[in-house]
Length: 487
Image (cartoon, rainbow, N blue to C red; front, side, top):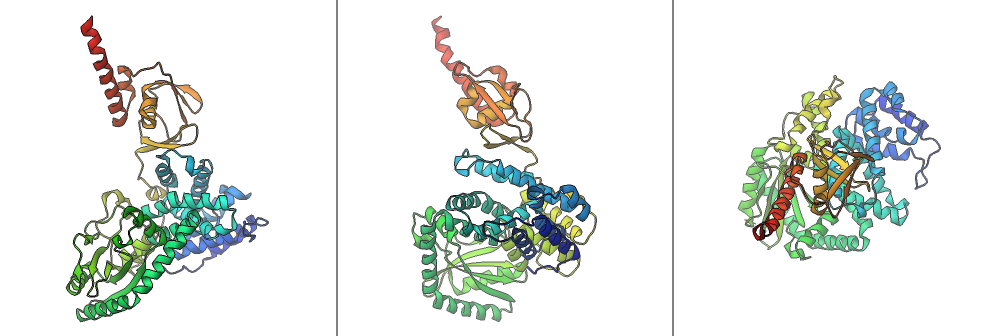
């Protein structure tokens, strides 16, 4: 996406950030301002709106300098202050977490969900991802232990977040940058394997490209054709699923065809199948039925005349931008639509859990035109019915809103739930029938002498906890039956 022309407001933000970070240096030895300027550049490349770019420039000022949110609000308005505040809250939440290796099994995914819930405004997450991307690009400056910790967290939290937002290019770059530090030997081994495989297929691919070009031109289909190099980390994950057998990986060689509209997508698919033999079960229509994150494309794997196995991905221009840049692309394209410079390639058939994107896109477009918007319309409601609560050790559990301490206890483990004698919420003794709130720290008190009680059924909200409790109550009733008969 094209870089936006720098406005006076952005120049003003750069000057303010430069002054605020004066005297601060990064581990690379460079002045600290290099980092926010790099974040700014990434956000511009993603086509983000002016307020997001300004917030990216200022994202570390409240946490690391004497600049306050009120200062930012006065200089750049409430929307920018709102975004900077969101990024600061995310950083605070992250700094309070323990090492990722010590999380409870559920915590890694919940941390990702917590980020989305705390992000509040989708642009906060996009700024945070730009921040993490630049940190990964400059990771070599840190000590080896920190390199590995940041890289591992990036693989397990930030790359999946990019995937959740369908930012494919970002996910691939982030994953490879991180994997290089998590397992350097494996990274180099797989990178060498990909290079070797691609080199051996070079002549064959050129022949296929010529055949496709001739056939599509004959059908008068406008298109662009390019190769897609599989990322190292993606290959690593696929090999793990196929017992390290590279012959089971059918998308090492992939060609991408970008066309004008959906009709041409299906026409192109037909042309490819007329040229080569499609592999059974390898035709996937993500246009009619998109992936959960909104990704749309046609995929087909074919066997060529010289027995090569090649995957084709066929999509429209906007589907391609959305596949590469995800929700960041939504901001860019909706600006084009509002200004009537862009009319084609509308993303259709978004899955139900992503319908909020449409409202987000419209709001973002209005915002980019300088029109007044209700910030609430940019809020993420993916987890509106969920709360995130902590164990005293800092592990995160997500529960439905309305949950109570026994729900929390049974989510931790059935053995804990069965032996509850009390609860502390935020360090103070509380009741088992108290509804938990967002961010509560919950400490469950247990005793081996305690057994489940029927009265607990009125102090439980979730189906999971209710099922566990009823199971234990029924088991206790069965155990008691022979004793009654003997009497």
